[in-house]
Image (cartoon, rainbow, N blue to C red; front, top):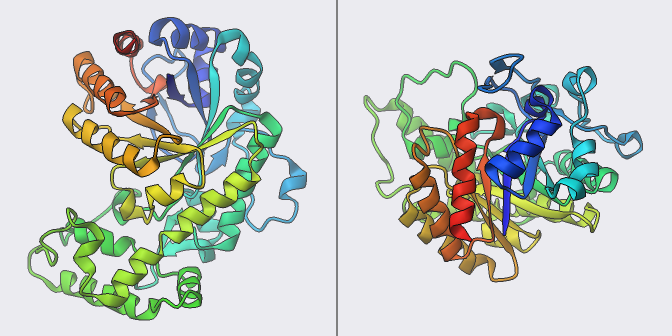
Length: 394
């Protein structure tokens, strides 16, 4: 069974590879490492680093050496993080040492969440019904964006040959993702956030119209619904059964309902393109959450274009995880990998017993593996929780 822990290159640089291998093998007892190779900005607390206690990575950069020939004619280009030049390349030694230390290597790859590229290429970002850009979210219906994500993974797999590439953010990101000092005096509810997240950029409208979908009427529907929300004195649900009924809430809005069903083709198309360009030695897994449908992601369709899914359920109870894994296993079938993503954050998982219950339940429900979040963000003592859970499953 696969047990892999997500990690950032700067944590491995601070702690050193010898410590990392010891922690993974002896303290956590996992058999895989999922290293971030394309990532976004943030502020990261580093409890175990002897060099610093907080770290601000560059926004939208990569942590591997790109093949210049592959990128020569690409409209959207990656930027290598200064971190890689100032410190050490962590991916190469992990790949070279994997047999010696018994750790499979996964490239944890953030695909379309990239504010740096969004500001540089505003013509390729998602835009709401009023044309407002979501600079942090590249649009999956853009040919240039699809080419960027495909080339990124092709470069990784052909140059480094990791065991797995884990794709994060291959769909439309939500308005509620957050940015920097967000202000909302209206009081947006879940349906308002969703409506503001639906992309009607030029790429989406053209692709929809080419497919016979009335994108302009759908856009008008969303504009009217958002205007109504903005005119209310206090927040009020226009769709009382959202999100439980998901897209079915909008079935009375024919154009919008059709558009929402159609837009799932874009993330699926990106995953298919990536898989076709991937070296056969590397498998492709897609990281998604319980509410992937909000991002326009059809998990069943996506899984048919790759090797499997890692489903993150950081706050779900053991019973909820049982239901989720059972449902997703039925969608995927028996031949596709299904992993569970769990968090070691205290506010997500306050006890070792809670972690153990989630993992044990997931395994019984049909999970093939577990990914743990995140190596450098939690105290060393908490790594032992993972080992206890793994031993309990055995």
